[in-house]
Image (cartoon, rainbow, N blue to C red; front, top):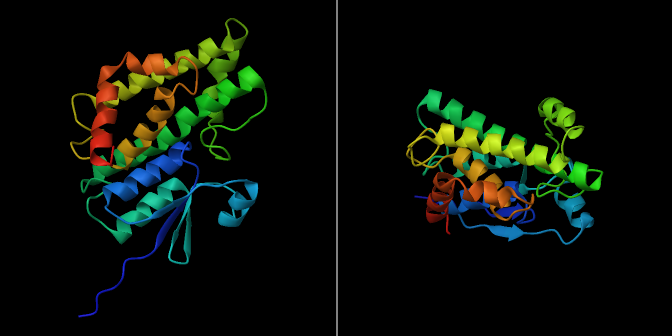
Length: 224
């Protein structure tokens, strides 16, 4: 019997990028050997991601996979166990939706904080990511005229953390008792808050021990 050698996997992206962290923990969960390469400058980004200029990307032997969601789905094909999506189609759809929601909404708040505090777009924890949520902006921009802009951002984050508590309920993970790609996405965004990259966000997270316990469970299953 011919045994196929596992593909060579290389993940390219900065570790302070939550999308890189999401992919890194998925690789660990799957028990796959991989190399992580962080860029040392814009020339690396252009060379590693010539089509979009965005990181992370992953190479599977000579195949280039862009976008963190596509990377996770590719890992499912390489090693289906443990799965990153529920076998129940309804639960899987909920997990996919939450993964997308986490990817987009928390990034939007970070970008909005930087815009209001320092001007421009700057370098966020997910620099270069394209999916900024314009539809979330109306209420926040209206609030700028009445209060400090950072207060509005933190108030929005506070609401989103409450949403997560409602989504999680009494389960170990979101919508399931098994870790999924939704949990990896949420964890990676919460990690940026725990590091207080938006000043005040670490306090908001610390006020919600259920989310901190959720983060600990993810870390237990993905290498600490």
